[in-house]
Length: 417
Image 1 (cartoon, rainbow, N blue to C red):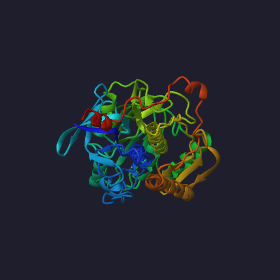
Image 2 (image 1 turned 180 degrees about the horizontal axis):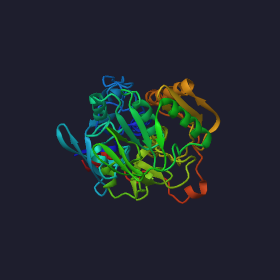
Image 3 (image 1 turned 135 degrees about the vertical axis):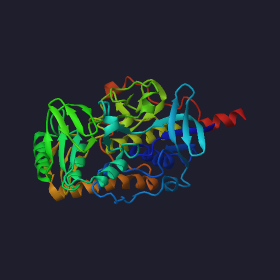
Image 4 (image 1 turned 120 degrees about the vertical axis):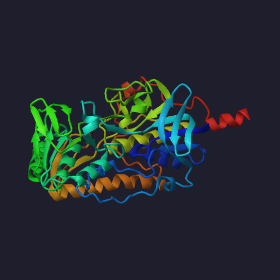
């Protein structure tokens, strides 16, 4: 068994940010840090919809191979799949190319993200999802789209949120496809009425049909069974929400209905002070400044804050509660987009940007999120988000701040030897 002071599960926006920042902020303490990822490259999940209509398109990686990204910077990269999290023994079991591997930890950071939520009968067998890997994930979807031999394929996208909109607008480019969005509630329910109007206009220009208040009851090989009747389709793509990873759900942490670990103002699991959770894997139970929506920016800020907290603990300093504000949001709709500012509480304020301008804004911020991860290699204390202090002090006062209740595992081993 390998012993580490900190084990970080997941190398997405949250996990990689946490690893980079923590390694930079704890050089003097020489902590043993392990970063675990199933893939060997950083995945820009915000770009998974891009190029669905172009089977041969491979998006260029904006970061080097994870094993090389932080070579010599203080952490160990381990490629493997997380199979079990043992809270009682404080260890993690992995499946790697070299076989099973056990890691023990002083503190654990769970940043495994989320996956498409498909509990509707038949969805797991007949619908594709916008995940990076899996039997019905994005690579398989691209292969299926490339194999369509009919002139005007019928494609159904389930879910009228931001992901569903972006996916549908890409799919209309597949051989003059007829694309329909099915939404159980209202189209673009996350948006204000003004933003919703602009999104509806853009989706209409793209040639996508939207059907509201249609509940999907089952997905079959060539049709979608709904509350208003059967809809024939050649391809179904499921974009109706995300949930926590099964391996995390199996741990028994206190969670919400979506499988996100309920965390205190310091982003610790409510029922385990040695475990932190970040990004899509966590849901703060107290007000933290803005709604903790599943998003890349929330992942980035929570990962960075956990790194700050652990670094302060090992430096003998008092950690601060988590707080953040949002900056804005932009949704790609094929060759155009809709964007708007959301400072501070994740609701649209100011002008709404449209068409090419909004698409350029989105592209810039998607690039910037990756750039911020790289910048923290050189500037691990970079204060890139606002709202740090937006928490409510009265509620935070009910929670004891984290402290180094046990010495790092490496020091324990030295003491025993």
